[in-house]
Image 1 (tube, rainbow, N blue to C red):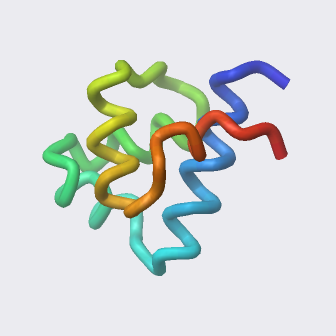
Image 2 (image 1 turned 135 degrees about the vertical axis):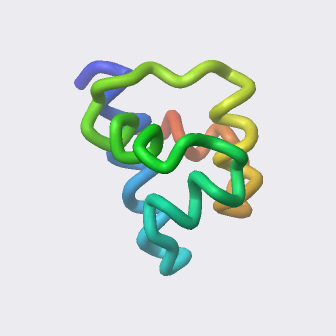
Length: 69
């Protein structure tokens, strides 16, 4: 599996575990509301800074976004 797909799957899994919508994650991370959906659909590649902000919102270590399923 490619890293983009791993990040997308982990983002979705962690987001859903927190009970947050894509829009809520985007708002809390200071991102465009469509951006999180694009990340989960593997249409965008996030920067390290963006991953750090998303991980903070999800209250998870950033490395969790890179764990293989």
